[in-house]
Image (cartoon, rainbow, N blue to C red; front, side, top):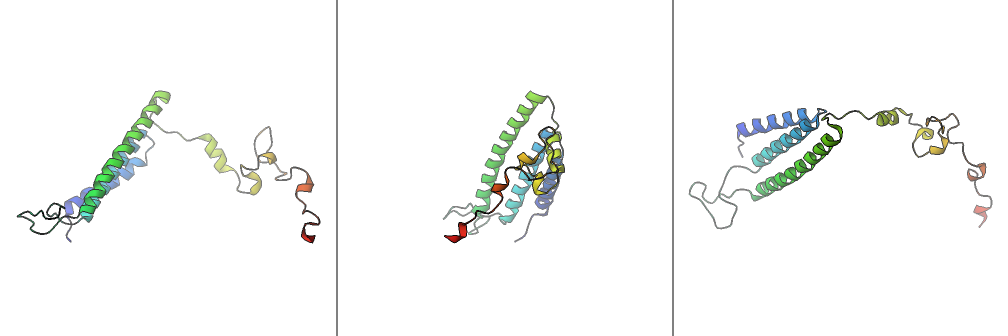
Length: 163
């Protein structure tokens, strides 16, 4: 199988530009990056399908390609990928429009609550499911840790292994 060098270079450029645009904080650039990345992957799938051939219909031949038939799987996958990328771009454009209506800004900012949760220590007393051990005034992990509730819950039940 021989690949078309121009299509391989074009798909590489599309994928690299798509990844670069996806790393930006602007929502419109992220959407453009996803679209470029999808088109680059479609070109790679087209190249994976092999050389051109007759239509993928049994019994149909052309004078140029003779009995050699094109790979229908690659064509079906590209068609499916186009439909999925179109639906995804419509969804992302709706999200961008909603963000523009509420914030009148295209940049996605850092969330301070996420930063505070990420900065918490990874000990068991600092995990979010141990809310009773947190200081009720500041919301930060207290020095007592998981020492809450009556001690009777932490002791084994006596006489349970006699049965």
